[in-house]
Image 1: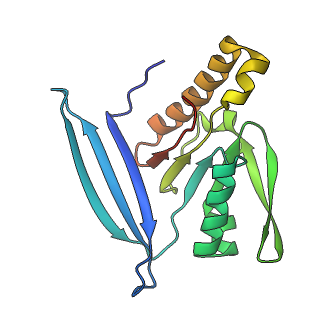
Image 2: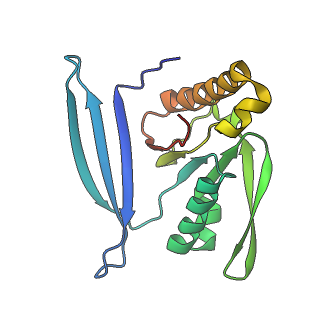
Length: 172
């Protein structure tokens, strides 16, 4: 399955210099030109407000780590307000944060497909069925599940071209 999304890939990195109280977001854009060549650009933005993020694959190791790092950076109230979490099914994400038990609502990934997120800044995409499931369900089912995940997320991104996207996958 191949889907083009404006022939662009967006990445961002967050850091806080030791002499500043405001995080810096570094955005990198990689574009595929019609000629086949690649163009790249980058921008720096000082963030005075925490970014509003969609986290796809929130119940996996990477997703939980991202939520925890967001909590460390922006605090509990901002995390509960600004993170919208997705996983394969509706559930709750329970985290112990500095002695406080927190519960985040996790939405089913199937619900992301046709939604618009005008008030969100970006998407962190970690969701795919891992290879350890391949021997249990077989190649065709494994591929079908991963194609459906990609289709749902890419459809959401097509409806929300303003979202900056960070994609990470450990599958081959």
